[in-house]
Length: 112
Length: 114
Image (cartoon, rainbow over all chains, first blue to last red; front, side, top):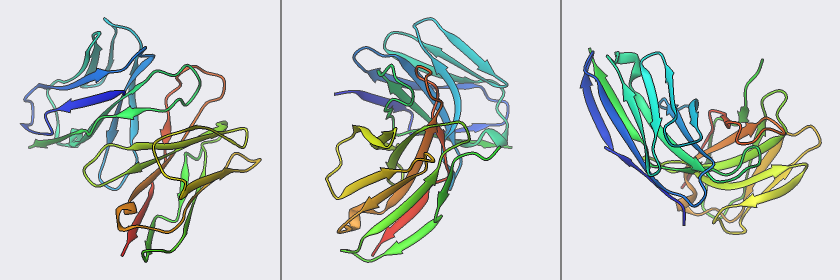
């Protein structure tokens, strides 16, 4: 059975204090590893897709990396507006919109 | 360009009742998936609709059913509601014909079963 585990469950940072979130996965034939951001009362917002080990993608203060067993979301010099729950999800389907297996998320709080 | 829209935003039902949730996909998308997100948990896949047929299904009982219309919009129906069905129900759509195109989510329907 596919499994995605995120750590830590919650993380509190001071503004400017860089850190990383972890996503470990056990998925046979991984086709894509996705990162989403979710604000309270909202749906998940797409951030990145990673397809193969060694791949990296960046967007503003966020950088996502992928190995054969885990993915990291690095947050550099975070700001209070980066506070949200970050969700990791894995897919092994090839078709559009294939089912995603989500982790339980990391709730990030950035204090000013 | 409207994204994924869901209605209603909130709903309160009594145990044993039935509920219908609605979703309009993002413009240009033809595949719709439904997810259930319990409080403090990640979303769990319920099922996916494409070309008006259920294509994939997660580990949810038959009380959960759905439909997709010719205009690609979709409904999620839940019968014989249980207290444990209380959750945020998310609809997601994706681009046709692109491998692993990312899902675009709506803001969900918050269902409370009392």
